[in-house]
Structures are given as structure tokens and as C-alpha cells.
Length: 103
Image (cartoon, rainbow, N blue to C red; front, side, top):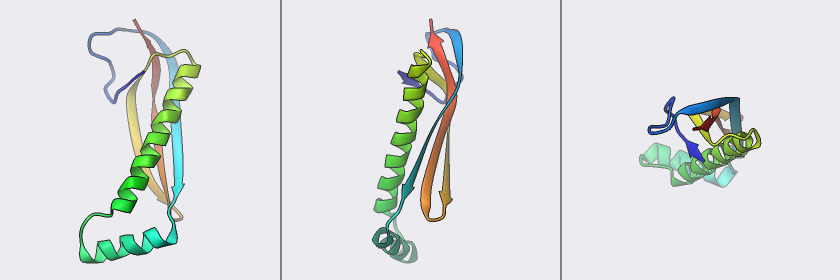
């Protein structure tokens, strides 16, 4: 399945719009990772633990988005938007887009 942030897919025409689909992932962060991330923030550098957790949440949200699009009979999702939030020490990633059938 093609998943893109653009409103169309080059070389294809949109034959049918199936509707808006979403995918969400909320990942808890553990205490030890939080402590090491704070140390990294103080001394500078990148927090690999949080980057990995954020990547996992993004993949989960996009996979859920694709599953919902497939359930509608879509062959692609266009106009995908990713949003990131922190809620009560948990990372949330939400993905939304328009499920379409390419012709």
C-alpha cells in the first residue's frame, strides 16, 4: 500500500475516495529511560532511547492507519499527517490521511 504525505500519487489517478483513516499509538516511557534522557538533556546530545520509542510509536500508528484503509478497500492513503504529543509522560503519535483507490 502506498502511504504518502502528498495529495496525490504521481503516475496514478484517484479513482475513488474511501474516507478519512487514522492510526494512534501511545507508548509509555519507563523511569530508567526518563532518568537517562534527562541526563542526556543536561549534558547535551541525543536521547537514543526516546528516539527508538518514538520510531516504534510512529510505525505502530502508520501500520494501524494502513490496516484501517485496507478494511475500507483502499489501495493507498494520501495526505498523511503525523502528530506527536506528550501526555502524562507517555508519547503519543497519531497519523491521519485519506484512504483512496488508485486507478
